[in-house]
Image 1: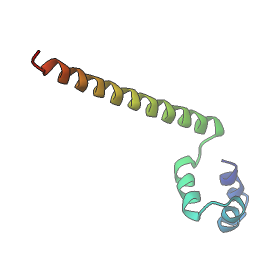
Image 2: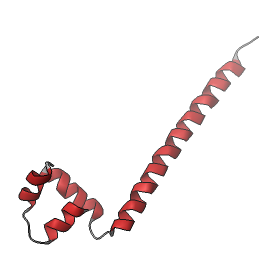
Image 3: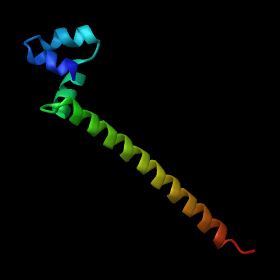
Length: 77
C-alpha cells in the first residue's frame, strides 16, 4: 500500500519498482487489486483470503477422509 501511495505523489512507477525491487507487472497487479482501498480494507481482504485458503484445505482434507472411509467400507471382510 505504501508503494501505491508513493506512486500517487508523482514518483515514476519504474523508479518505485527499482527502489523496492519489484517488477512493473507486480506493481500494476497490486494497483489493480488494491486501488481505492484503505489500509484496513486491504487487511480485511487478506484476512478473508487466508480464511478462505484455510477452509478450502479443511474441505479437501474432509473429502479425502470420506474417500478413505468409503474405500474401507466397500471392502469385503
